[in-house]
Length: 358
Image 1 (tube, one colour):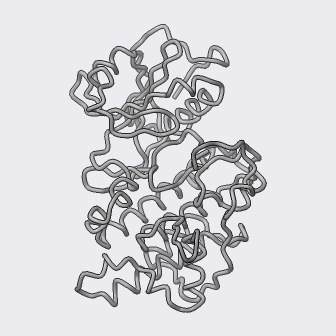
Image 2 (image 1 turned 90 degrees about the vertical axis):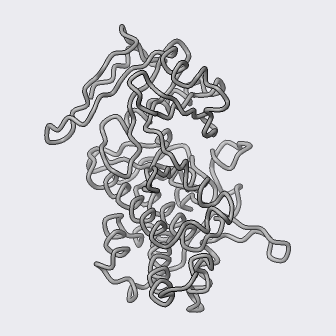
Image 3 (image 1 turned 90 degrees about the horizontal axis):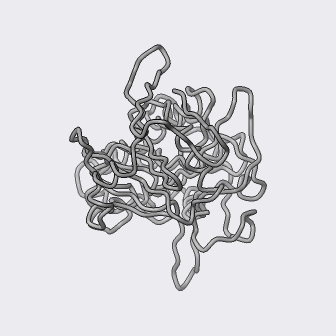
């Protein structure tokens, strides 16, 4: 796919609704990347009405919309505060990462809008919002996440990352894997989204040094401290997500007796005491073959712990993670070393922000 950058500050186009064909590996044409006008997207979302607002983050807001052809989409509108070089870089990063990818567990990017200072991205609409909204929002929602759904989400995200890390060239590192960046379609199938922080790795590149960005609790320690980004940084974040999915606990908890408790640290302690089974979300145990479920859930948590090991080279590749999750490769005999985690924001080499997401 061709995207033109006539100047460093903006995209320009002679047509407001130009269609650019996306050519995929093997010559398969999987769809069209469109340049939308701002008025088209405004009309589609009923004037970016609050009733159509489905999400909001540091980038701005996301609205549900319906295009003239009847298709329902999600429209991400870059916030005014991000009309800066940083905002522009994240906008470009998202297009560069998603415009030429095709995978069942990645959100599909339909196109964008570039009109003056206005920046919008148009995606498939996900009926069940995000994993954070559905799973972490309240206990009632979590109660509906049975083992089949949790396993499906864990495997789907792993497959998406294996595709980005190992099949795509240049490789893509997402840099912000977390529950709110995993969207769920009408059947609760996971779609990894929000590639505004993504970085492309040319063949033969082992790491790049960059400004630290991500979310506290999911950040790999070596990246947080040094800014040295590798594919194993995503592996770490994925491991945290798996522990979160199986335990039903927040990445960072607080109680009066113990203060801040990091899920990674708690899981490591329970693993050392051979009590990982006690960390399985009680809401999963509603009867049936609980022994089999617990054994499988513990295996998933062991894979999660392998992904968050402090020594980067010991973390598995995502293709090997998939084999361990599916039982193709045994995990029981694998030695798991101590995990790393960032317990103090002072350890993170970033410009201080008000949010945990930076």
